[in-house]
Length: 223
Length: 223
Image (cartoon, rainbow over all chains, first blue to last red; front, top):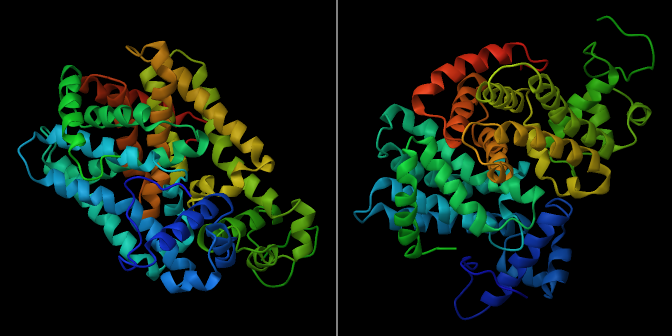
């Protein structure tokens, strides 16, 4: 079964079962994104993963725990990037360019459009509070960079950050209509557009892009 | 409560006076967006709408036909706006501003975040081809305006239009985290951001916004 690069593994013990947990996650991702979350049984996941159904319950508390792990896996690498970009002395526009580029790349990665799972009604449930908290942390990370962007007034930062993260995550919607969407095409375009939204003069985009690409190459989850 | 003549209703539930088909659509929208499409039975829809289950099959071929109608209902008003904005002599930036503003307003409207249904795996099915076709028409409408935007090269227009429509539709994702999101706050912000993405100089935004608001007031679906 093909493994996706850059995606964290399930938190099962380091010596036993890591491969199985990942196989279960991969199988569930494929089924949730094609058949749907509700229509997918743990039996179907087990069958696709090539494990016994009991194995699933050895690694996960249930189907919701598999969904939670998949959702967390879409946000954790982004948060690692936010942390990595918080330090250093690179200018804010370049850091934000690198973050947007990396996040679009992550959302385009993998066989399954896992971001589409964000819109499942189930995600409003208490059992997915951890995902919603990490996603709020990601938005805070964007907000800090947006607030430090030259020319952005502090009181505008929360709304502008929501807009920026919205544009980054809109590739989830775009992938739906264009399954062959390539990160290398769309990620720089989105990252450039974010700079324009925040008022970077047109003639400075190429410079910020070059700085952002250099920064991005050093990120923990560089897509 | 005035009853409309025609097919008998079950005694419980809302008689909104808007017609049985609309009551069925409203009930289904609420259930699809909270319980989920797969988990919602036509029985549950009938119960919530206050009609007999047989009534549903009088108005719709089945649950999928209800979903299709809800999806079409999110795109048809936008297409009416595209048509209305195709004529006239208003400048392209103002027309695009008006279209973005109206579409964000439509996506924010109503109790249920119907745009979230775009990401259901079922929508890839042949039975939803009409929705996908209308949505492609909407994208073409955006593409025409983007292609006519001052300074946009023709070969850039399709990708930029996808980006613009993505930003407009990202309010679907935003509403998920912020159910109290208000169209009057977010719609002008998105419409302004689209102008910046396409390179409108900062000092011209206020003028285009004023033109766009005036144009928008005359649209068939002005939110």
